[in-house]
Image (tube, rainbow, N blue to C red; front, side, top):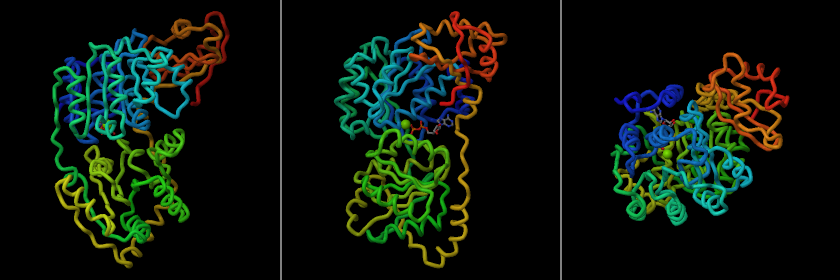
Amino acid sequence: MTTFNEFKLSSDILKALNGLGYHEATEVQAQVIPTILNKEDLMVQSKTGSGKTASYGIPVCEQIDWEENKPQALILTPTRELAVQVQEELMHIGRFKRLKVVAVYGKSPFKDQVRELKQKTHIVVGTPGRVLDHIERGTLNLQQIKSVILDEADEMLNMGFIETVEMILKMTPKARQTMLFSATMPNAIKKLAKNYLSQPTEIKIESKSIATDLVEHALYPVRMQEKVRLLQELLTVENPGRCIVFCSTREAVDALYQGLKAKGYPVNRLHGGMEQRDRLEVMRNFKMGQFSFLVATDVAARGIDVSDLTHVFNFDLPEDQESFVHRIGRVGRAGKVGKAITFVTPFETKLLEQIQAYIGFELPVIERPVATEVEKARAAFEAKLKERPKIKVQKHADVNKEIMKIYLNGGKKKKLRAIDFVGTILSIDGVEKEDIGIIDIQENVTYIDILNGKGWSVIDGLKTKTIKGKKLKVQKAYN
Ligand code: ADP
Ligand code: MG
């Protein structure tokens, strides 16, 4: 067992980890954290759900120099959802160090991202295409980049981003530290590592079979037209708290979602054809427990971390074996047991064989539940459907509790700078420098994070004070 105290981490970071409920380092963290702190380049192969984000997030946050205004770390991820997830995790880790972590990704207003990047930014997380866009337009400055992380490198390869990733790497300073994380190490990734990493330390965490350990498997041979019925029967019998149902195409997701919705199930959907705003909202609501069943395609659900997920359904078999592993990786996380239910039609025997060869074992075929079994389970299932959804307290609530964002109705137009706000806030009794978090100055408004539960004292204090001689309206921000 390795506790985080064993690494040379500052108290700000340790305090944040404590708030997140991270007490012991996971296996990958125990190996990766000291290696990164030791400034080595790194190649890590480790299964999904092993805590990779924090394994680089902790040492990267530790190494950031708060005083520097230009970005010092760049993290590339294959999807927008992952970029947001990583950004949130890093923000939580760096909270007390007051680190500003910005996520940039496609289909989201360029202008807003430019505005964020113009201000003090310590860490940038983004998808390769949008990151390159910012670099080319001169809105993302790479001069001070000291670390570059490629997260889910194999997936970036699958999605055709590898050339973009190379272009970005070429533009970052040569003296950088480069870290590559991947669930698998296909040749193209090894080659990338050879060209862009310098004498990397290789860390491979032998995953025990994804199957036997924490995930119980069940295979149901079924004809195409019977799939929806079988799904309903199994949902009834299994009565999962929350689950993801994977389909192979957007159209299949839409069709199944409409069907389940019409039957009154607490269901929503996620696929790459949806607006970015809607995708993020669906994920947020799913994480908070506002609905129980998520129908999704592979890409949209890649790497997504939802606590207490008990079941995944492979409603359609995935096209490639790695996607199967990634789907299954959504359950059996953080030491909890999960169940993976896979449908296979008579035309998919070949595909199934390939998957079984890849994972190294055969999925056990299970008899379809008989009608009496389904009937017996129905009352409990329907009772659960009728329950009002329990809104989950977000995992990070502890850290957030002490932080309040305040709003002030003045910004750049009034020529206000961070130092003006800091000066006035520090003149309030009982408020110290450590209580002031991220300051986001926009054209006409400013948002400031106040830490350590002092939000209301600052609001009250500011009501009788001026900032650079100007009287501003101040209130708790609601966004
Ligand atoms: P990966 O990137 O390897 O798929 P994640 O970084 O998404 O894994 O982490 C999986 C889950 O484990 C997340 O919910 C994360 O908050 C949690 N986690 C990470 N490190 C720890 C830790 N040291 N203790 C407890 N939970 C952790
Ligand atoms: Mg990850």
